[in-house]
Amino acid sequence: AAEDSLRYTYYLLIMASQVVVVFLGMLFQSFHEGCQRYHLTNAITAFNSVTGAVVLYLLLTNGFGLIALAAGNTIGMGLKFLTFQQLLRTERYGGFRFRLRNVSRESLRHLLSFGAKSFVLGISGRVAGSTAPIIIGAFINPATVPFYTIPAGLVRRVSNTVHAITLGFMPYFSELFARNESERTLRTFFDASRFIVGFVLGSYLGILFLGLPFISRWIGPSYAQKGELVFYAIALYFLWPLLNPLHGR
Image 1 (cartoon, rainbow, N blue to C red):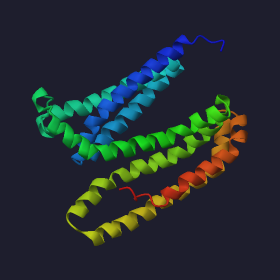
Image 2: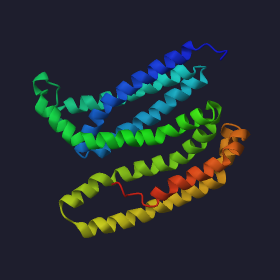
Image 3: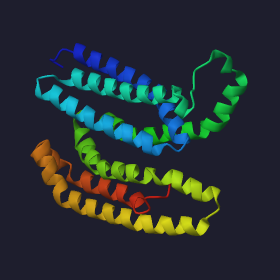
């Protein structure tokens, strides 16, 4: 309460602009993924993530704080999505341009009929993953939220890694489905699942034995002690769907 609230106002404004950037930018990324160019989107995203991490590290180690972190992250995302958009404009990737004459009620109807389900599923997934801190803060108090978010964030790293690993299987399964190669689909599904589940179990052994000591060194001993039960509960919650990692692909 004693701190100046102006920087948090700037922070919220930057994060609001980031929402706009991501909302528009996902259109261009999704267009490439719809054309099965996962190798392209993955390569650009990986390069952007590594470069962004280096830049943010340099900013933070040179005395810049929360505002610089948010601004740098927003600019990095904007550059990534701008790259996707510029590639779509080239002849190699379709030579797409925005033209006002293509905007019509008919095109809107097609977009809504095709995208409504995906939009609702996407929003519900985001809401389901984001409401826990709000509920904790409302019913207990905001000071207890980190004891949930820090352990959950650590466990979610494994979940996000598996999500990235399995993403490349989506176009492959789509192709096999189009060719009606059900036997090959099943064989690939089971063989790949074994390897990925092996990675999941190995990762879980690591976080179960090293997770709390890591949190203790990373944030502080109190967060590891007070977040211990939450940590194990969240780990169990995330484990079940990861035992069938390709179910959504």
